[in-house]
Figure 1 (cartoon, rainbow over the protein chains, first blue to last red):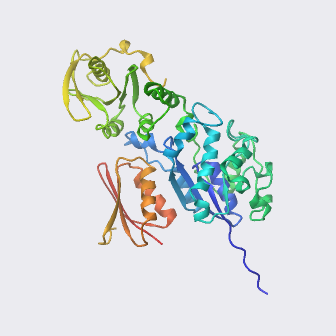
Figure 2: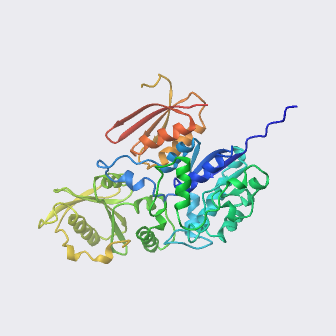
Figure 3: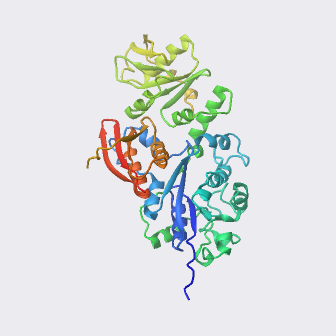
Amino acid sequence: MRSIPRPQRRAVALISGGLDSLLAARVVQEQGIHVEGVNFFTGFCVEGHTHAIRDRKHEKPKRNNALWVAEQLGIKLHVIDISEDYKDVVLHPRHGYGQNLNPCLDCKIFMVGKTLELGLIDDLDFDFVLTGEVIGQRPKSQRRETMPIIARESGANDRLLRPLCALNLPPTLPEREGWVNRDQLFGFHGRSRKPQMELAEKFGFSDYAQPAGGCCFLTDETYSNKLRDLWQAQDSRDYQLDDIMLLKIGRHIRPRPRFKLIIGREEGENRFLAGYRKQFTHLAVTNYPGPLALIDGNPTTTDIELAARIVARYSQGRAADKLLVTVTSVTGVTRDIEVTPMAPNELEPSWHVGS
Amino acid sequence: MSAPNLPLKIVDARGLLCPLPVIRTQERIKQLAPGTILKVLATDPGSLEDIPAWCRVHGHTVLETKREHHDIQLVIRVSD
C-alpha cells in the first residue's frame, strides 16, 4: 500500500541580512521545509544608503546583505516598503525606546505582524514564521520576557518559531505538529556569537555580514540627535521619508532655531542633494569649488547671508577675503551675494546638529 | 547580450536609493505576465548589483545592463 506523501510545509523567514537570520532559515530548510524570506525597508535602514550616496570611486561595490543571504539559501526574498506605516512605531512605541531612538521591541512586533498582515502567509500559503532571534542577544528586544510578547502582540502566537533558541522556549505549533523536529533546533542564549559562528562553519557560510552597529540608523546616537532636532525645529514629532533620508548625509548646521543648513561633504553627497533643489533654497559658491547646501526652514534675509558665509567656509575659497555665493530659491530665482567666509572660531560647536 | 525587440514596460526608479529600485521592480513584476520585458531606469549604482541579485533569487532573467555616467538601465524578462 502506498502512503500519501506529506505536503511540504512552508515557512517565511524574517531576513535582516545578518548571520542569525541566515542560520535560522538554514536550520529549518535542513528539515525539508520550503522557506521564503521577507525583508523590510523602514527608511532607517543602514543597508547601502550612505554608501550609495557618497562618492565611492575608491570603494568596491557593496552588496545588499539580505539579498546575499537569500542567494546563499537559494530562497525567494520579498522586499517590502513599510516606511509609511513604520512611522507610528517610531513616533509612538508602546514599549518605549531601546538604544537612542530605536523602538526595538515594537519594531520586532510590527515586522512579524506585518508579515502576517501583508498576506504573505495567506497568499503564499505559509504555515509559520521564523526569525533569527536569540534570547539575551539584544538587551531590549531579545529577552526571555519579550519573546512571548512579540509572539502575542504580532498575532503570530505559536506559529512563530525561533530555531536558534527554541530549546529555551515552550514548543511552538510547528514543533508540536511534527513539521519540524525540535531535537534538531538549538538553545543558544546570551551575547556570545561563538555558537552561531560554529554553526555557520558547519553549514559552510564564511562571508556573512557582521554589522558593528546594527542595521538601523535609530540605534545611532548622532542620527537620533538629528531626528530629535528635526522634531524640535518643526514643533512636532513627525517626519517624511525625505527628512529621514537627508538626516543620513551631509553636515547639518543649525545657526538659528528657524533654519538649518545641510552641506554636502563630497561630490556624491552634492549630487544627491542636487536632487532636492526644487524643494529647498540652495546655495553654492560661484568662483571656487565647494559644496552644495540646502536650507531647511524659514530664514530671514540676514540668515541667508549668515548661511552663505558658512557655506563659503566649507569651500576651497575659505581663505579668500570675499567670494560669491549663488542663492537659488525653490522657484529657480537666483542671486549672487558677496560674503566673507566664516572663520573657524566663529562657527559655534553647538550649531553642529547631532553631535 | 541584447534585448529582443518587444514592447517594453518601464519602471522609473531614478533618484531612489536601494532597496527602493528593487522594491519598485518587484511591485511592477508582480503585475506582469511571464515573458514580459521590463526596463528599469535607476541612478543608484547599487541597482546594478541588487536588481540582478533579486532577479536571480526569483528566477527572472536580466537581459541587459547598461551604465552611462550616472544613468543605469536594466532589461529584465519576467519568468513564470
